[in-house]
Image (cartoon, rainbow, N blue to C red; front, side):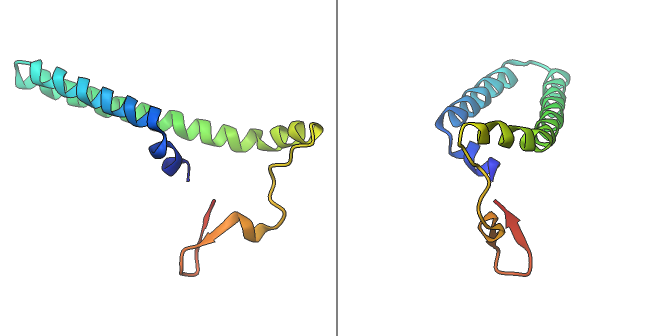
Length: 99
């Protein structure tokens, strides 16, 4: 769900397009196969690092959510849905996708 939301965000799409454009320009400006290969390896390592960062962020958000919910409740804000059936959407099979 988070992936769908970020892909719909115009600021994210603009940043993605800008970085892709710059990456392509840099790749085209390199003169040797070794330089181009190093650039691709760097991109791969950035992606790997970003994936690890996202996993930690997601897990920390899950760990912090009870505390955040309690703090919000102090101000009369409830983010917990009333029934569990509202937390899932049917995929048409026996499995459900967490919203």
